[in-house]
Amino acid sequence: MIENKQLSLRPMMKISELVPYLKEKNIKFEKCSECEAEKYLRENNNYYNVTAYKNNFAKYQCGEFTGKYIDLDFAYLKDIAIIDYRTRLILFKMIIDIEHYLKIRILNSIEEIKNEEGYNIVNLYLEKDFNDEKYPRRVHDSIRKKVSNDYYQKIFSKYDLNKDEKIENIPIWEFLEIITFGELINFFEFYTSTYKLEDNKYIFILREVNKLRNAVAHNSCVLSELDKKDNHYKPDTLVTNYLKSCGIGKENRKTKLSNSRIRQITYTLYLFNIIVTSDGVKQNINHDITKLFYKRIILNKEYYNSNELLKSIYNYFNKIIEKNYRNPDE
Image 1 (cartoon, helix red, strand yellow):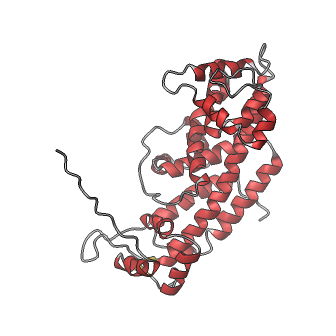
Image 2: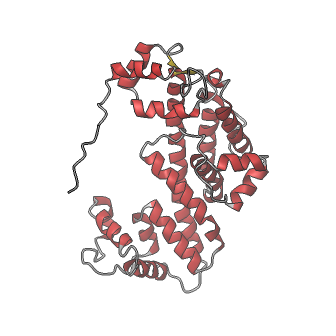
Image 3: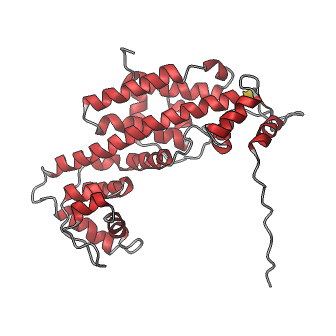
């Protein structure tokens, strides 16, 4: 007979208990007072989000302070939290634009394909989805769930989507409007593979962008654990060449792209200018990035004078932004 083991659950800490807890880890409250920190945690952010950035700072490796942080003030964590929030806003805008212009790219390219009227490729894709051995009807189920939304009902009311049958004859220009970004990428892979299109080379890059999209859409921290080496897959050759053109050397590329989040942001910066065709949209993003990178991020640069990790990452992205995104008029 298996005995039930009671889990030892940690009690939730009150905000008043968090500051003493952080002080035990040698996090200081000199540039941001304890009262200010409590107020910030109560009104602006939660403990988990703010302290997620502490992993970007070094710890003592020996002696009486082993495992405790070196030169880390709560103000530094607060500063990165603000930078992270503003970074997520820009990245989300970029990814939404990538999604929009990817759809336009598909619609423009399909006009050049003989005997493709915009129904055939969708029918082939939905047939594959309907009979998929591993995940049957996944896209079908997704579409049926969405048509309960008033906006989609207006578009798709003319289709028979309520029965448990294969969906057919949705034109591509309407189909693209109802699928998620992840489903769009899967369809794009099927479409480019079916017609042997050169754009198939962007699939793996798009998948990394989608991972970042899911993170920023759910307000997950994107600037935490930047020291992790958690991606051992070979970087995409297109991106490697892109980084070479930015003056980023082999060892630097290898080190930075071994971190999943840095890789995802890099891939997004690469793909944005490939997919987006509007000069106005590009100029708007350039303005936002320039303002963030050369004004807000360096506002408290003295906080990071001894942080070689964050300085190295800033210099890495600086080379990309200087070449491709910096607005010279700002």
